[in-house]
Length: 314
Length: 292
Image (tube, rainbow over all chains, first blue to last red; front, side, top):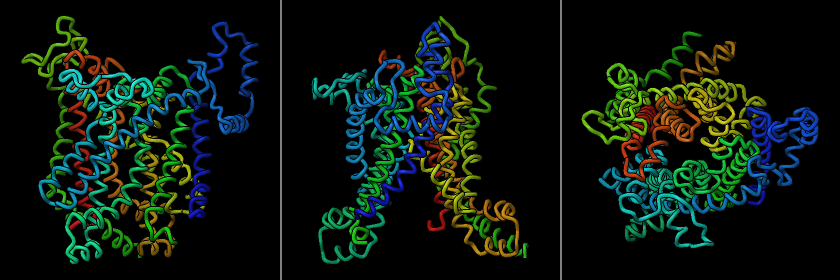
């Protein structure tokens, strides 16, 4: 098992290196010269040249990359041009907000997707199946920013149940924090619930055809026991790994959800950075997202082996 | 010999065509999806000729009017007709979906075929680069590329196309790996046909079907991505209409109960994406030999 994990980490390293090259090239392609911004309105040529030397911009590109990568490895992702704060500090401040939102969205997605997938598979070809499959298609087709706007209109404006926007930190008030995040989490988890429902249905349909399920039924076990203890436990193996992979998608989905509900998270950070041409932040966010995504891929692979006894013994 | 190879390859690629059509036409949800896509394509192409309203003409006497017999979908914050903007917005959305997927296929298809067919170092380099690009979520990548290229519909299409290209590289590589072990490809190699000819004549026709399915499903994602970029201000620029930008403006007025500026463009995105998803699912089922 440790060999397997070590091998997967070794495979992930070149991918991370390539992502870092990609992010570095992206920075070089960005329009505008950040040195001119740093030089201020006077744009003194001596100051500009000194800044170019300081940031090693006169060096050849490969040397610039190695210098940048060395700094990044030490946790220095640069300074935000707009806030003058280290990029890593900004990410560290915003990421917990998005992680809480993503965790709540994942809870919604699992709570809706798994039971719906089980019902659709167990009652295949019935009204239950068509309803769950239809709902999944709806979830995959509705853009989350449209769903968010409609929920604000219905739940906040018409029914006045939940706040339309804003964010309260859990340290300030946990109940207010949950009230501000319930609707965005539902919106963010909606498409995920649809994907998880489809995977659960497909995995359950495969497992229900297996001999051990037929044997369990032949032994006279209650259908509920056959489904929950024998079929579901095996069907959940691929679902857990898929859910782990999909957790990364939530970071991308959060960009729009945070914009609609004015949540000061990771997604809003990248959008604000793009519009303020705060390239160090864009670069830092893309790099951190990619590394997080690679980490989740690794976790999914490991979980698949951990949860699957046949692979564990190999 | 070449004729025999052609016949074998043609049998593999075209023999089930009538069966595929039969299955597709029997699949009601695929038909509904196809109908919705066709309807929006007609709206996008013919709508501007039929509609009497100008989508960018403002009217200060008709600002934020609710749907009525005069303005069926109401008017927006500048008094522009929402129906006209939804119809003209269909052009931008459908064009963005189709063009960005075409860009993705043009970039990803050849790279995937080269990686799968030649293998070795070529495959390793292309595959590692693909994995690196896939490590970045689709929308974040599109936003990052959009910020490099600058805000416009054309740049949004290019950004989405580049962000979607790795999906096609992975698919075409996998399909090529399967097809290149078929007897007719081995035979073509054995008689000394050039690689380029083998790829064009024997590989491409046999990997076309899964690419078509993937393309249909990714058009749906690309339409959402374009709407997302326009929603964020990185796509179609005002005053030209776009569903995503309309939703961005509409959201500011929802809290005042003025729902029509958001509902109509939102429903248009939803129906178009649903149509492509239904059609894509239907195509996948029809082309899957395991489905009876």
